[in-house]
Image (cartoon, rainbow, N blue to C red):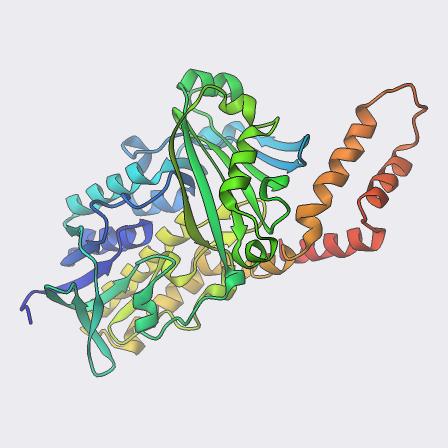
Length: 432
C-alpha cells in the first residue's frame, strides 16, 4: 500500500466535489481531488442554469473572472402543443445586477474554471483516473484504490455523480427507483451573440430561460428547457424514466421534433449544432436523498446524494451541489480541529445541511414529484390553454361567447373537469 496520505480525498470533479475541495484547501487542508475525465467538465454535456448566489458565497466576486455565459433576466414558462404555444414571461432589471440571481454556464468550461480556482487554492488535481473502490479498516473508510495505486486520507468525500457506485459500496445508497430518474437529451447550437440578442430581445448582459410543458416530451412526465448562452443555445428535454419506458418513445426523437416546433425553429435557424447527447439525471427530489449522508471517515455530496429539484418551473442541481460541498467541507474542517473523523463527528455535515438552503429547499419541494405525477400536466393543460387563447383571438365571423363559457368549453374538449382543475390547483399550491 502507498504511504501517500492526505487530510481529504474528494472523488469527482463536478461542482459539489470542486466546491468542497476549494473550501478545504482555502482553509489550509491538504486535499487531493480525483476526476475520471481528462479534465473537470470533460464528461458533461452543454450546461444549464446555475442559481449563483451560493457561488458568490464560495468565491466572493466570482463573476469578475468566472467562465459564465449570461445572467438570466427573462424567465419563460411555455405550454406547448404540436402546432402552437402559450408563453408566460417574467423579466426584471434587478436580475442583471451582480452577484446575479442565476447565470447560464457551459459545464466543460465552467467546471474547468472552478478546478483552476481549486488548484490555485492548493488542491492537488489528479485527472484521467477512475477510483475502483474504497479502502476500509473495519467499518471506517481510510482511502481509495485506483487499481494501480492506493491513497489514504482522514476523510473521503464522495462526489462521483448520479450513478455513484461508491455510495452504494459505502452502504449509503441502494438501487435508485426508475421514477426517481430521468433521461435528458441535449443539444448545443452555435449562433452569433448579436443574432441571439436580436431573436430573444436581449442586450449583451441579459439571458433567457424557458421551461416547457406539453408536446416537448410527447406527454411523458418531464419537460423541455431552452437557455441562451453567450454565443450558443442549450436546448433539450428531460423525460422521467418509468414513464418513458411505458410510452416507448425516444428522447432523441422528442428533441428533434422540439427543434422543428414553430416556436423553436425560428430561434435556432441557421445555427450550427456542435454538441448532441443524452445524460441520466435525478428527478426524485427529497425522496432520493439517502437517510444518512455520512459515516466513519466519509461524506456524500451533490448528485451522488440525490440533491436535485425539479418543480416544473425551475430545474436546480448545481447550486445544491455547491451548497452541499461547502457544508461537507465545513464539517470536515470542524472534525479536523478535533482530530476526530468518526461517524459522530462528521454528523456536523447533516446539521450544516439542515441549516442551509440545500435541505430547506429540498424539503420545501418534497411533494413536487408527486404533483408532477398527473398526466393532465403533460397531456391536457397545454392543449386546453392554447385552445382557450386561440378561441379568444380568432375572429372567424362566428358570434363570440362570454369568456367563462369559452373556458368551460376548452376544459370539456380536453377532458378536464372543474373537479380536476380544483384538485390539481390545490395539489400544486401544497407542493410548490
